[in-house]
Length: 384
Ligand code: FES
Ligand SMILES: [Fe+2]
Image 1 (tube, helix red, strand yellow):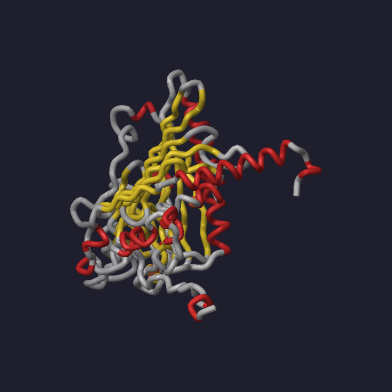
Image 2: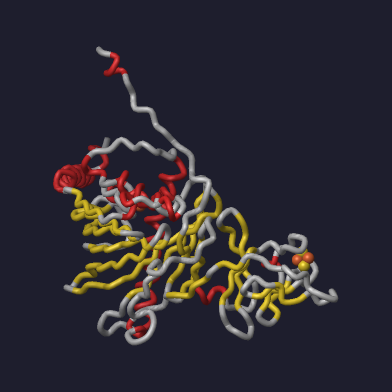
C-alpha cells in the first residue's frame, strides 16, 4: 500500500454564501395577498410586508419594520394606498415614502423605507432582490405562460399551490436537482431514460423523459411515462412543462412551478403549484382535480428530497461519475447570482449542453427492479 491508497476523500462542506441571490423571487399566488390586509413574508434574512393599495389595486412590497421605531407593518392595516403601522400609525406608501404621520405637524423630510421592485405575472407575485441595489436588467424577467392570461386561458385549470418550509439547508440543494439524474431513480422512484441539461445566460434547463419504477408505490407525478422540460429562469423560479401519459393514447399537459425564496442563509421556503390543460371533454372540476393530483404528486417528490436534505451535509467538492451530470458546471451557472454583476464571468453564463448517457444506469436499475419484483412474487419466505 502506498500513501496514496490511504488517501480518503475529505468533504469540503464550505459555507453558505453570505448574501442572497440576485434575481426575481416568487412570493406566491398574487390573489393570496389581495384580501385587504398586510401580509408578512420572512425572506432575505429579514421581514417584508406585502399589501394591496385600496385605491390603486396594485400589490406593494416594503420592508416590514417601520423606520420610526421598528414596528411591524405586517401587523398594521391598509389605509388607502398605504400601510399603517400598528405602533404609531405612520403611513407608508407603496413606493416607500411616508404618506403621513396623523399626529405630527410635519413628516420628517427624508422619511422613506425600502420598497421592493414587484411584478405580478402568471397570477403570481415576484420581488426583485439585488444586494447591489440595481433594478432588473432588461431581458431578465419571468416569462409569461401561454394560456394563463388572454386567449386560451379557459383551457387551463386554476392553480393548486403549496408551500414547504425547509430548515437547515441552503437553497442550492434544490437547484442541484437540475443535473442529478440518478436521484430520480433512488429518491423519486422513476427511471430517468433521457436526461439532458442546457445552461444559457440566466436560464438552466433540464430535459427528462422518465417512466415509473414498477416496484415502488410512492413514485412522483405520474403513473405513466412523463416528459419534462424544466427551466430555472434565474436562481429560484422554475417552469416545468410536463407531458404525462394518462393512458388510452392521451397525454396530459401540465405546468408545474417549482420556486423558492431564501428565509435566511440556511433555510428557504419552497413553493410549488400546478395547472393542467383540459383534455377533450374534461369539466372544470376534473381539470382542477388533475391539477390537485399533480401538486400532491409533487408534494411526495419534494418531501422525498427534503428528507435527504435534512440528513445530508452541504458539500462543495462532490465526487462524481460520468452519469452524475454536470454538477460543477451547474454550480458555476448558479454562482452568477451570488457575485456582483461586474464579476459575472463568461464561464457562468455561456451556453453549455450536456446529455447524460443513461443506458448503463437504466440497465442496472431495470435488473434491480426485476429482481425486487421476482423476490416479492416468490413470497415473504424468500424475502431477505
Ligand atoms: S414604529 Fe411604526 S409608527 Fe412608530
Ligand atoms: Fe429531487
